Length: 274
Image (cartoon, rainbow, N blue to C red; front, side):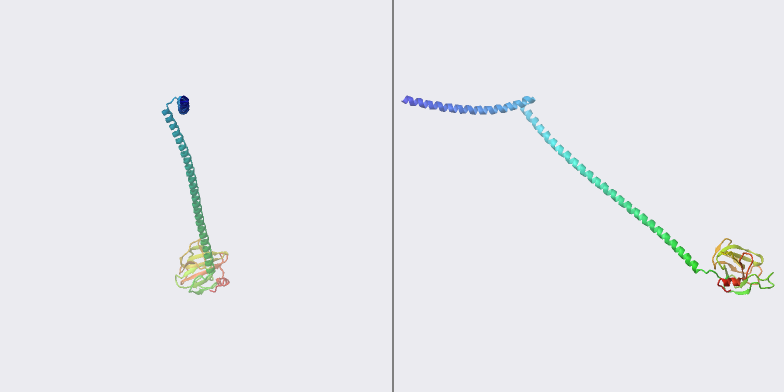
């Protein structure tokens, strides 16, 4: 009996030991498998590259670093391209703004130039208009016909006989103070300014209708042949040159330029009474 119990206890101890051994063996096997797997992976890696584990780790780290550097370089390139495009856009906008400013400045300068030219042309046109108006006003204000001198009295008339003339008198004698201005009775052109014997210093003026008026015995000439004169223009001064007994101007009217007529009715026909 005692031996039977002893065998039973020994049997239980053997079973327990076998169980423990099996568990330890399984644990050792699991551990060995893990180690073997790791070793086999490392060996496979090192075997494929021919590098030691430390070299493989360094290579892996270098690859990772290169990958990171490449990623950063790509980011930098993308950023640089974006910045370059933004700069180009700003430059393009700046150039466009400059062109617009230059165009606006040129347009303003052209407008100022045109305005100045217009103002100049307007001023010139205004000056011409004012000059024309002044000339018209002067022409309207100027007398159309005047008597040959002032402050006079008549000392001889047309066709009057006397011992002082070789034949009857051919004009009117306007006696006045020596040096009194002698004036053209109408507008015209001076055709003679010379000394004419018994007539002394003589001026002749041809008028628009061909009539010639003559002024003689003058002390001086104030015009020359070819001058244009208006009614009232001074042609000389009262004198005593030629055949005369006192200061006066001998005035004649010659419709055809040759043969004198009576000046009195001619003057009256023009609105003047000598």
